[in-house]
Length: 362
Ligand SMILES: *Cc1c(COP(=O)(O)O)cnc(C)c1O
Image (cartoon, rainbow, N blue to C red; front, side, top):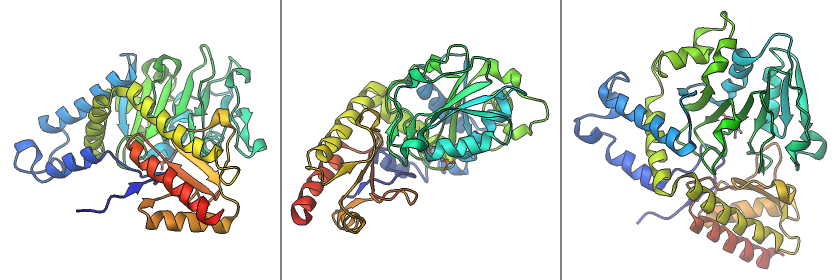
């Protein structure tokens, strides 16, 4: 028997165990063809079926209409930070960004290379512990677009509702909460996500882009960096990341079996409630780092009474098969990443561990 590990890694992160076993079973002989899918041409009918399945599942789960293209790209979410302003920026018009954390700041830094960035929210002032009500933010309707990062992986905050930007295109980096809950797709012009947190392995980036906006893209943008190139070629302008796309097809199939995004949301709510209750009922021993109304259901961040105890906590948790709990190097503390694939049992084990740790070290 293998020892059961609960994997709280922030990314690359846990994948559904059933998906791992399925990929293993068909790795060397893919569905009876006699060799592996990773050895197959991306233009073959065999692979075309897989990419079609991935796209169909994503469209079905997220309710994506034909006005949008579903693209499988490379370069990570980080390349999207540049592709968004390159493709849908408008010369002379500001780009509006909400600075809610580490990755939002990275996106802002990149957009500044292409034009004028205006911040609609400055989370740095509250040490990124707060998002508040995006309905209070002011969006200049004459801007090129607005940008949000839906879940702040490192600080542990998440939008529980999104701003109303009217006709102004809203772009969202959903790398760490994509498909963790239902979203109203029609609110967004572009959604992108590196796959390695909720969808699959690293190396593939999902981008869902509203096709009418692509007319904005200047002619001199490099071919590979234009969304329209990938739209016109069904993500096959060059060799796509076939392994990642295959795993996304399996993971999205698994999400459908779990009751779709409603099912994921129920599970993620139960898991995050269990952890936040443990934090809030610890008489101050564990301290959440984010305002309760803005807490993330994906990345639960907290502190202990000292850095020394935090180190001990993570070390002893690892020994108890609860791995990957150390906070990001930029912020310290403890972070439990409880993406879609983390079962409730893993969170219950962590809660038990927190109780016994506090009893022994309180
Ligand atoms: C992990 C993460 C990124 C970075 O993704 P890469 O694929 O490594 O570029 C960007 N945004 C968010 C919200 C993330 O969680």
